[in-house]
Length: 349
Image (cartoon, rainbow, N blue to C red; front, top):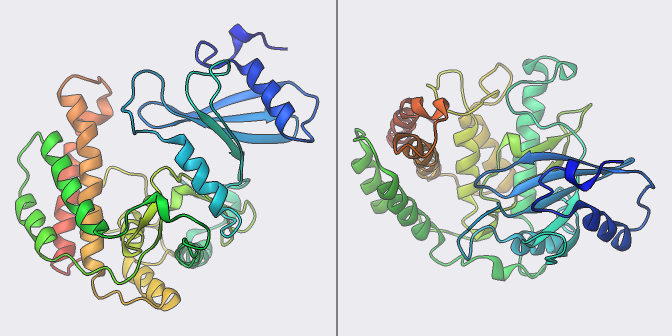
């Protein structure tokens, strides 16, 4: 059996005490040693896989060190999943939430581990060719997004997780402000793009649950049938707002073969996957929503993705990181601004 000093991040987490809490709280835990695997760390919330025999769970906690007062609100994530899982089973089931300094210096929660496959950089061999699986994955992703948007968030008491009135306006101005904070190089066409985003803002017709990061590598697919989605991950930014923002983001990350380097992993540029236009039309068909303004939401999402990469490039240029991958980020950043401008002039969809 591992000693405390052999366990991962033991200086921050008392794994022995955590295991005691798990056994005290959750029934049916096998009599085996708990194993720990770390999924992610850094500026995002830290995620660990806990395994005890054939039982698995995912631990989520804020980063180590100083963090802003309202950032990394783990309790908010837990609350969302607690209310959402019963009506949208693709959301992981939360097991427990705890604030206990004898376990760790941050609040945390445990949730179920959705079993399946996450496609990030390549398609698993057992799935077969992209021509074979592309259409079914394309359709199922749209279906699962529409199912989320059909959740009656008022009925499940999720009104308090967002401010739907003025959602899009706040988003646009917030991201423009963020770009100002992290700007390094002059980029052609950005000022015109920002003016267009401000002056051509669509009216939000209705409000729904918004995942805010709904994309292929945040979905868990059935290991044998990729057309079946088993789970939706990463609810950190979920809120109530304009449903078109989620389809806009999905289409941005849904790369095509003709795209330039966007600085992200893309598998949907292979034969068989729907094009962005086909995905948009499928969404309109399944959701019944008018997608007249779809170009706006996709252009805005390209803009946001450019700024996400810009923040990484800023850190490298200021000497805050020596990660050489960030040194070349300026290329995809410029490409993303170009894609946003091409989208707003109806040359992408």
